[in-house]
Image (cartoon, rainbow, N blue to C red; front, side):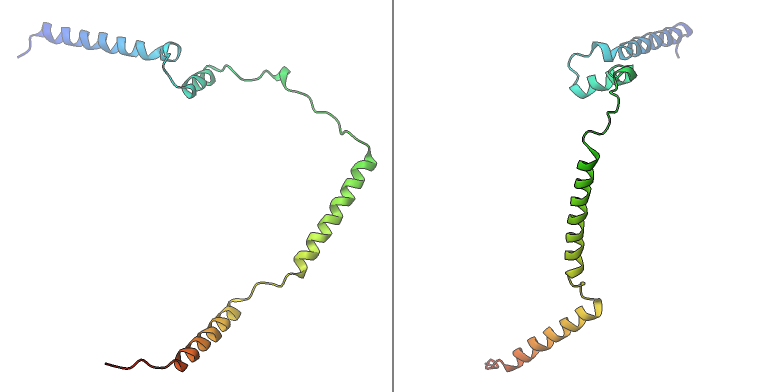
Length: 124
């Protein structure tokens, strides 16, 4: 049997130890000197530091160059597109499933015919 004073002492001791442990964890981000780089970066992110200020974001610049220059570039790209489209249109479509099966059957028949022409091995 535990005495009432011993139980009270155990509760107080556990509370004090728990508070000390939690207090040590609360300041871990600032005191950690052996933490890896990613931990330090995450600590900065969690604190809200390291984000750019809105005033530091650059403003958009206008288009540089003359309109005629951009029109010439667009025309050049359209010509390249036409070449690629012509090449694509010139390539034959891939064979269908039925055509593949027919080719396989033809090749199988040729192999079977060649195998039948081979001389038979003598049975011992």
